[in-house]
Length: 263
Image 1 (spheres, rainbow, N blue to C red):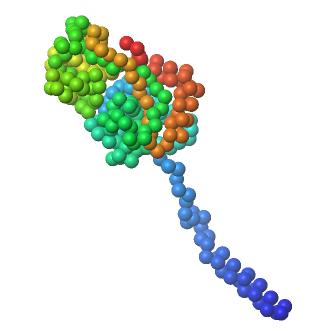
Image 2 (cartoon, rainbow, N blue to C red; image 1 turned 60 degrees about the vertical axis):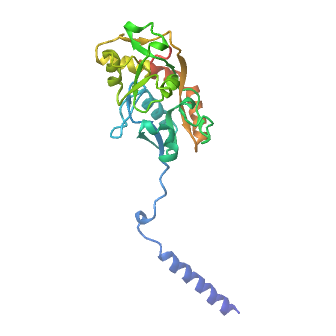
Image 3 (cartoon, rainbow, N blue to C red; image 1 turned 90 degrees about the vertical axis):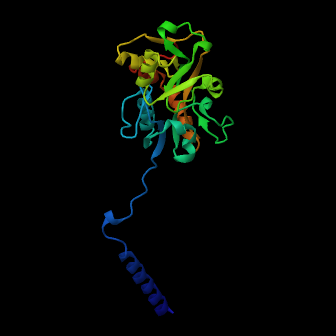
């Protein structure tokens, strides 16, 4: 009986040794752990400085959005990548590009007003004015006076959708804010709906500061930029906490990029 036990024990020992010897001796040949997920942040493929400035070739241009989001992700040790996407397909990004986040986003820009995709929006990141901006000589213009609107190709002119639908307003689309501003200055377009901070940046480049102003007699309203997601609401919650904990940082970024929220 002792002999049988001894033989079984010896067999087990040699079997274990044989299995152990099959393991690779070079530690570098061992399969590496899967890298951390790279979160994809969908951004608009347009230079909309100072608010954001992204394109397919360079997503590292300085802007308010880039600085803020980079600081957030880095502070939480989250690996991410900006992906510049076509503005015209803005409301299809989540369906077509498998992105994790979108910035900027706002419920008012969606064709699907029921939010059937289950998008989670962050707290407001920055509050801006949706308005109608005209040549300073037309500062007292009424809604009836606006015959044409210059805007960025793919932008959603929320305040003028009914007029466009009824073909009472023609739309001139351009790929850059500078081209949009030039249309208004030259009288090719009666007005534009792009953001005042972006307009003022373009006017400064043209040395025409103050030549385009808000038509205060035409309905205008405040709206906000939000950070959004479908799959990662827990990260949006972290972002909201980040905004609450870093109000001074956000204020400094607005000051750095000369962003005015209330015109």
